[in-house]
Image 1 (tube, rainbow, N blue to C red):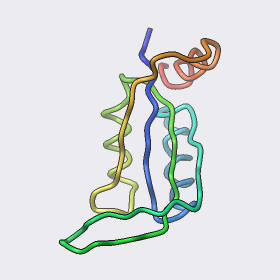
Image 2 (image 1 turned 90 degrees about the vertical axis):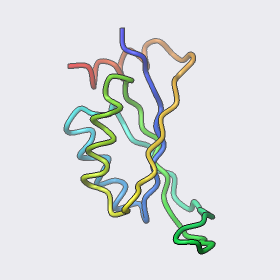
Image 3 (image 1 turned 135 degrees about the vertical axis):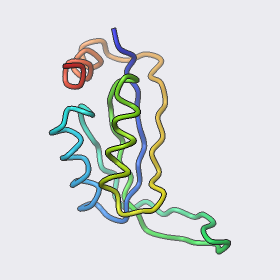
Length: 106
């Protein structure tokens, strides 16, 4: 049985994030994407301190799909270096975890 993971991805706005999410779901790389608007990111880029409004995506997939998700995000994302992080799921609702697996492990 595949290990379920949760991923985090930011984008400049909701529309771009939803577009990436739609492609990933349609291609069965992720089971779903939740969008959180109103995120402020503070970071250093090109040796300058930056503060930008972004949208945050929370995605659910399996460990077996991590590499494919990362490649596809890099293809679709407007950033030169998109944030895409994955964390293992230690426990959760088994029916939900089974649904995630069923959506991506085909």
